[in-house]
Image (cartoon, rainbow, N blue to C red; front, side):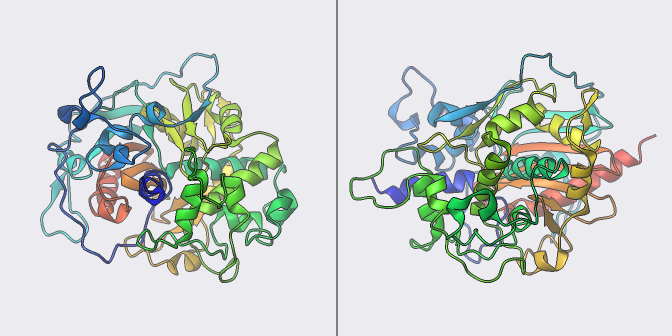
Length: 439
């Protein structure tokens, strides 16, 4: 088995959040109904038949359409560490379900014909979606193999959790964003991260050499994936063997602070800084500071490398309702479950957004006027909406003015959000307008 074959699947599964449009034509894929993992019967049986068996070691688990099953079962295939919800009761999510959302119509970006909300869910290969309005569940749907009690890979939505932890520590004075990374992690002094500031990590404006071009076998993303793989390395492998070892090899390219560049290695480095500043792993800190205080229904979990280090760049898996709870907490400026879970100052810092000029240099044509702050995508629209985003359609979208939170898990065959944004972003906006118009 070629290591790069496996690593391609692993990286595509976990590392990206939003990619610049792919200039190459995308292959055609079976639609949501034809690729339904429950209908196809992946991993059903004791044991499953050979043609429905999926394995991590050979990359079969992340080949479409099989990956539509895998994203709801990562723990079954990969080593993980728990993010405990604690021992307290779950916080109830009041329901006020509406029957008028499925038929809501909107115009997709670049389209000439409108689409309904219901049809957009199939177009985006949605696995599950929860919409909160004023803290109440107004819409909830599950498809394929994801169930309300199930968990799903959040992909690069993970990055926004890590950025939130950093914002908490900064608000409390336990982390100084103006300090150099090497002051917290001396092991990174000789790397490209060493003379970057923590703030530059948090906003992804570092000048580092880290290509995520999967067509280039020499791109750094392959070395990153190989280092993070928990599988045994080939006998002739001489590269780094963990995320921490990989980060020490990252070389400079360009200047820090000049332009936004979406690179997963930044989040891994920030996770290391957070662990040094707090004395805890990001999984432990996430449990202590957020997950155990939300009144979550389920434990979350994170995938890990061969040394047990949580994958800060994309390894979080959660229940859908719990992801919505996290979003509702942020909509309420950090207050939820009858307590101030995170400092309001940290939430305000996220919502203010980052440098729009630096963001524009990255070339996201579908995200004009947006910015990136504390590993959150900030729209700067009239509603003050901001979002956590991950490959294959994962999103936590928060619209403060509409008092709306959308949590969605998906398994779109194309990793880049450019494939689903045209039918997602206008749908979110249309739903916000609809909810705001209610008496």
